[in-house]
Length: 181
Image (cartoon, rainbow, N blue to C red; front, side, top):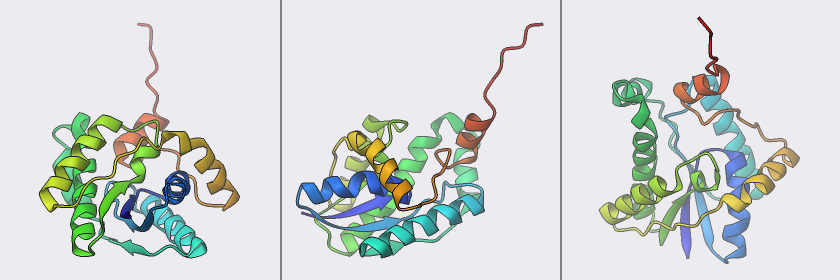
């Protein structure tokens, strides 16, 4: 099967691509992640992705849009629902591109992370697959997470420290502390 793989970053791609190879699939990779903030973080992840794609000689596609205002407007009133919006936004773009480029299916490296909601990703991916007429390839890629991180370190790829959005950055760095009054 020829799969378009949405990639959130180079390190996560390192955790999924070996599995796709093991299964005998062909693939191209797609970077589109308008949820990553601030811009310098977005740029670092994009550059890490490009480095990996070129080193491994993988065909890739970039949507370098950075619609910060659109993203903020979509999640500001309900930040607890931001992950659904992010999944929908990115997987819709991946499904549309897979359809246009005539891939057999599409998937995402989001499925490698133990920190992401597998069920919600699958639900959104399947809905986008139906909408665009391109099947969503689901596999629990989480067993590739640690090996993928090790491979990314060997490749000297930029390793992010939070999911990507400003809310996840806050959660990572501003841990709530109980204060006795």
